[in-house]
Length: 196
Image (tube, rainbow, N blue to C red; front, side, top):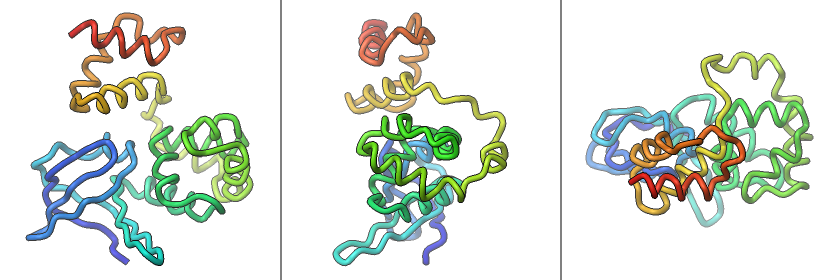
């Protein structure tokens, strides 16, 4: 197994990074939480990895922390969840939110993640609830506040429109009324584009 890759970050995108190690550059799919943790391109970094082996495919996935990789490895053990859907789950909510939803049996919250239906969410709860205790949730960094999914979705939409991650975040940070829960994602994007 390949434990990690260490080298220079050449490219960094919300869905993948390109890491140069010696004379070889690796393209690694990553969850959004890893994107937020990794340094800017040009910096040296270490990316933890998981090699997914299938009959017709070998894919090396990247993670910024051991916690991300462990959650990914737990998710892919659930019947019906492959590596891509596991990455989507890690990108759809923070690890703390994901673990809390699993422990509390919050099927509705889990099925709000793109690609995860009610039955898959129920399987996640059944198969992982005993593996994740409340103590593990409390052990997560207390400095991590709840993720505002509206703001994150708006930032992702701006990135999809061609903005750099940092520029998209800056635009959303300047949106008037951004913390108002009645302002939906579409309105956040409209207001962000209007402030340019």
